Amino acid sequence: QCIPAEERAPSLEAMQLIAPNLQLHAPENWTVLAKTGTAEINKSGYSDFFYYLVLIQTPDHYYSMITTLQNPGDFGYSYAKVMPLQAILDIVYPYLTEQEE
Image (tube, one colour):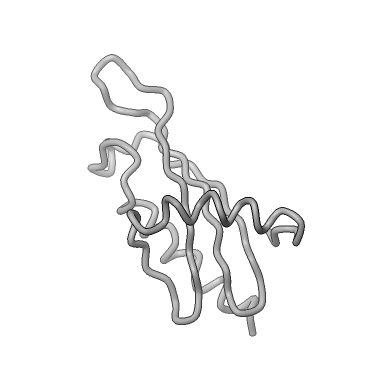
């Protein structure tokens, strides 16, 4: 989904503070900013959900993506680390590349 122009600057400013620590990979000339988090911490200390808010800037568009990963422990992840997000982005990038053509 494209981000309306009036919402771009505040969103980008907030996420640029977090982005350098995430070290996400993106196609050439693209910028990816993301916020990660956990929810539903159970008694064992593992989260049942990770959530990710992602902004992707291509040469022609801005896209936003909100996604969750349920039961991340089943995939070997604990807490909202970047690794599962990069895997999700790697699935999304080809679709967005088609949209850019």
